Length: 454
Image 1 (tube, rainbow, N blue to C red):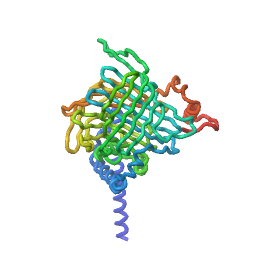
Image 2: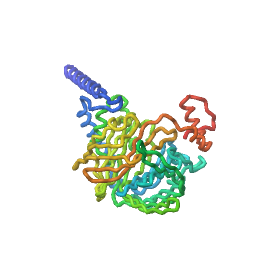
Image 3: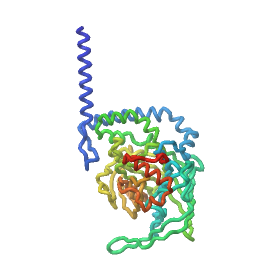
Image 4: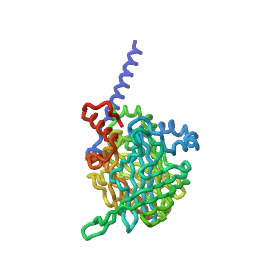
């Protein structure tokens, strides 16, 4: 009887300690601008726990299966256009960001969605000439089918992007028009001088001899642990942890450095392009723009042959109010994850206007980098079927540890204006019917039987 009493008291004491620990860990840290958590009293304890759990999770998903995941068969499956599932959030995106020492810059992104919906943006920045861009921008939505069939490749709106050799070579073609915006400098400000549509033929080949950087597998565990350790570990947080493995499997994002070579015909003029850059491929079902508060992303190409990606994502609903990310790629194509960064979202463009100059420091395990950025030009596009996000695409010059370079920056913000009627009334009837149905669900209105969810 005495032993049983001691056991019961001991168990009660352990339960009380665990309850107290969970209560303390659930406390919210001080928030900057009501969004970005500081390091709380128990930051280091939570950091250590998060780091341990992350390493175990990555070992179970990636390290233990490294032979399979690095096989040519798996990489070929990963690198091709992905079949879209019945999930209404299913997506498949391929993007290219490139630049050269002369200051020429190219950005292309194609996002495949269900029923043949394609979201497209192309920017070409030529120093002394101005910006060439997709004629429909800032709207990105295009329709490649009649709404009764799915797409199976990155094709439509004049584009065709496809792999020629998995993880080695991709072809990028565009035949259509680009809007050319000329500018002139006045004593007061920069003004738009002229806009015209030009017929364009673009044919580029992306080649890479390097491996790829998989964000789920290769992003520094210390950066993820830092973000998680700043959050309140409440009931919602523990519920999310139970499904994190499932969520990771539903979201793939990898990048690869390489070279873009080819030609573009602008009107009656032919221009040869030789650029260095990145190819991005993302697909899955867990990509909800409406849950993202902000993000900033830099892709920098340096004159010594190295390159750098630096970013910061704010997605509080996923307990990542400020997740820093990125890597440095050496001239030999070796990726070194960034382990620390002092780039804080609240210090750069929090009120909705991106800065024209940015200076910050990032670290890898071996080096420290002082990054200095100057914006040369910027353009705006809206992302999402209802323009859920507003993106400022910046074309920048940079200096990293005294080495010059060129590149791109993206500043994404939440947008609540919706997609204007002047734009949406030009959509096919079947797509307009889908959007009406989605709005009726939000408003709890009655709907017709013919309506369906996209």
